[in-house]
Amino acid sequence: MSLSQADVLAGLKEIVVEVAGIPAESIELDKNFTTDLEVDSLSMVEVVVAAEERFGVKIPDDAVEGLVTVGDAVNFIVDAAK
Amino acid sequence: MIIKSSPTTNSQILSVGSYRPKRLVPNSEIVDRIDSTDEWIQQRTGIQSRRFADPDETVISMAKAACERALKRANLTMSDVDTLILATISYPFQAPSAATELINELGNPKAAAFDISAACAGFCYGVAMASDLVRGGTSKNVLVVGVEKLSDFTDPDDRATAFIFADGAGAVIIGQSEDAKIGPAIWGSDADSRDAIMLTPAYTEFRNAPDKGVAQLGWPNISQQGQTVFRWAVYSMSKVGLKALEAAGVSVDQLDVFIPHQANIRIIETMVKEMKLPDSVLVADDIRVNGNTSAASIPLAMDILLEQHPEMHGKLALLIGYGAGLVYAGQVVQLPPQP
Image (cartoon, rainbow over the protein chains, first blue to last red):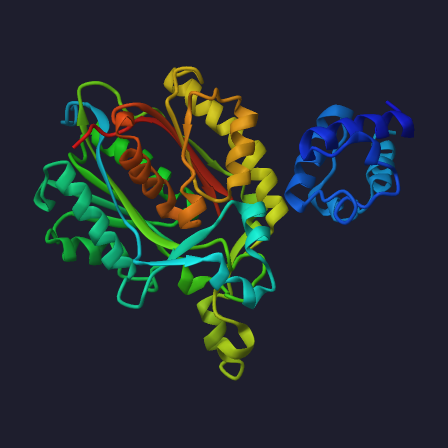
């Protein structure tokens, strides 16, 4: 199943809003999870697990460290779903 | 020929007792060495303070105090106890066991006694074994003790662990019962993640490299991969909890109390959400004040919860222990009656 970048961004926004209580409009591709959005390492795990369920992909622990921006996460999920 | 065997019985927790070290250490005493803040620690873990044992508060002295309280509350003496199971990772001797030192100190050096090494799952492993020993007729009254002096094996300069681990002891007595008051244990391992929590280096490293010593090799301390442990703890252990409820025939609506291993408030809160526990379930949060005491955390949390909520004596509780191995065990129990 292939997913579009726009679809993944929209879904990821909902997840980040739910997990971290951040307004959806502040979540953009170039935003850094830690410094811009204040999603800490444990909340990031919640985001990752919710994204795995929603998009039907696997995001292993050693890949999570590389997901610095929202765009990194979107691209990882789009690639993993191909 | 048929082998003679004891008639089977059911099992229950007769009492609980605990010992908390005298010294309460707030985050403000920890933060300077790890360049952190009280706010950061509370946000990541819920921990406001922890207890560190003084030199005269040893693994054995803390365990002894917890056992004596449990014995008193059950109106038993040590001569009534035929078995003692002790869970720890911080007794500083490989042999003989801490359990044998403890039965000697408690005044019944003839009881069966052994240690188990199942880290933060150790107490629930002990409850599972004690319950089955009683049910099978091998034992009549079993003391199950979880005790840790983790301050001896924590690096005060490690930004990932220095604020988490703590010291203390908790004990329960498991004895016979007409009705089943301890449910089947759901237990197991995820040993392919064995390196997620480690206590290294091995003692033999110091012999093998005497020129390096503690200064270069470092003292054996606990290290952990926080994100890996968080993910495993929340998402795998929630399933274990639900299986333990199912095995006991108890629905989430019938559950009164949830006492998970006190590792991190964020893990506890996310587990509650994942398991969809209703608001009516009282959730233990001793982690906030007393830190993560590994094998001791569940009986410590049980004891303080019953002190603060005496109406919960005799109510149904779900226990889940999980930790280094990675190993886990969970079971539904009826909390002990009011002493």
